[in-house]
Amino acid sequence: MTTQARRVAVATTLVGLVAFIVIALVRVPWYSMMGGGVDAPGESDVFTPDQLAAMLGYSSDARMWSRLGLAVSLLVACLLGFTPVGRWLMARLRGPWWLRTVVGVLLLESVGSLVTLPFSIALRQRQLDAGLSRQAWSGFAADRLTSLGVTVVVTSLGVVALTACVRRWRRVWPAVAGVGLGMLVLLGSFVYPVLVEPLFNSFTPLPDGDLRTRVLALADAEGVTVDDVLVADASRRTTTLNAYVSGFGSTRRVVLYDNLVNDEPEDAVLSVVAHELGHAKYDDVLTGSLLGGAGALVAVGLLGVVVRRRDLGETSAVPLLLALVAVGSFLAMPVQNTISRQIETRADVTALNTTQDAGAFETLQEQLAISSLSDPTPAAWSQLWFGSHPTVLRRLALATTTECRSGRSQPALRTCRTSL
Image (cartoon, rainbow, N blue to C red; front, side, top):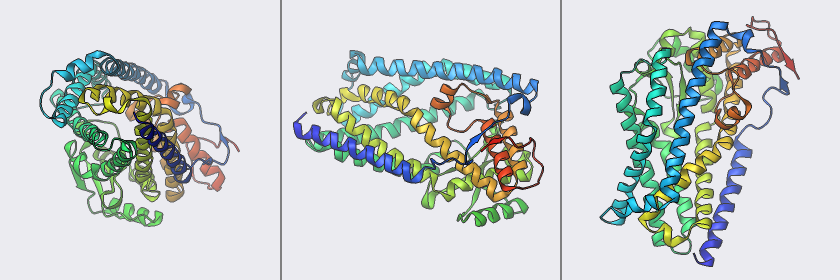
């Protein structure tokens, strides 16, 4: 690599890092939501012994299978990327460089999917045994193939774009590729709701009625413009209750699982909706996309520092690129999930302040934990690395804290425990 290209790579890394820090400081709520420490309830104060046994038993097995799969996928990615094996596979391919790149991504991602398939099957069987899934094995296979296809398309676009920049701009490729991939991240988040989500679920508007009227009233109270609230046919796949917001701008949508709408009390559904509207109010999807774009700038800059340009311009570098992405994504998980937990907490606070119904929030959080058999007290290191949401006990503590601080007299499931 020329001295100029290395300088551009270093500058790209620094610009991306500064952008990431500024975005995180400005758009992520780092202040304490509770105004101080919180004394969370004990798990035995919230769940029955039978519920705890089921939750801890399943979550322990789920962690084992998912993390074994993660470890094996990282090992295989490193084997293919950091040894001659991957280069040997790529050398067997024929055709123009861009076609070899796409075929190489397909081959390598397929290998990764196959080696982790036994762990996914074991986890899937455990979900069936626990009653968390009702999907047929044929549906499971179809979802796996669809996910693989989406991964191959997205990864191929990124790798082809990066390689094209390396081949076209010898001295400034880190800056051009970094900006280009950052824009692809933003574009991907924008089109995801309309291009990818329909591959996995069907969506229908929330029917007219009291619930829809109250949902739109919540949106008005939070100052959020909502064109529609959609219901996904998730019950054909899972018994877990959920809702989410995706997209931003004209593609932003609030989606509720159909089993949440059909099986839960209206007040609980409204608590979920208020939480998701909180994400929409603060444009949290856009925040994540901006952080992802800045992260792409950092990643490309670092790539330009540690890998020679002439290597990156060849299709033989595809296994190395995928290995570096896999390792980098794993190492970035604590930062990503710490930011996610802060954003999720703000959405919880928004829901509590909007609905003024801590009791419904508490009931909902308990039901969500029970329906998904999640671990109420994961190890601290596990929560730091893998926890994208606050634990259920922290969320319950938030509800009681919010109620105590507001002075409301409505009934709650637990007494107020705070150390403010």
